[in-house]
Image (spheres, rainbow, N blue to C red):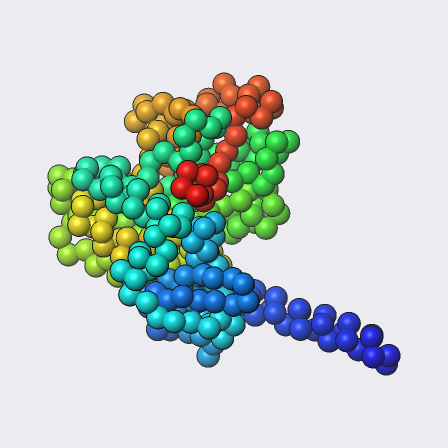
Length: 326
Ligand SMILES: [Zn+2]
């Protein structure tokens, strides 16, 4: 075999091997920890948020502090230096990431809708977020199909965020696989948002409900859900959505200490809130919010011409914050 052919074949094998590594499933995750650190490789400087082991390899969940993109990668590919959360805040204070955390914390006094609730000021369009709280009903596939149909000529893949709860994922494997196939086929670009593992809801007032319910174990709600996301082939984003959009100052601080940015909504359609330019729109896609879904389909219809003329777009949550804080 000629040398050049041999090199080409070797490169092919290495590349194939690499993709194999990253196509690997995280069926058996061990030692999943909050582990902040500076992770550098060549000219890439990232922040490690989590570390874990799977199949005897050590992995990191990493974030790019300027683009807010997250990825899972082998720890051995980076030189790392451990950091306290307070160091992360100080060292990266001028980045989009820390500015977003600060903006989200600045709105933490209210009992509902803390966090960032308006992505991009004065832009023609919205950021769409779809919550998948635990449900016995099937996914409202019509939402996703409508977004694809409406935007395929102007934005493909169309960006949207899906907030997943653990209990939804466990019960709706077919629907989850269908969503993943839309991403794989580049029909939609989904940002996966942590919406807690159990998503408890009780009959108590809001101050003692959802994550504020007595006995809530935040490690289970946040970290077990991330593990389940990884097991299902979803890369957790840096975003977090409070169940019921309910929180208090203390719990916002605790969620941010996991390195996560709480995302609220200024246009929960089923509650009659109208979206305006740059709104973060919330609808539930878990079969329990008929009105919200109907309102959204209606909204798409009224914007049909604007969409065609690129006067009404869907914005990616990450890019929206990047635009606002860079
Ligand atoms: Zn929910």
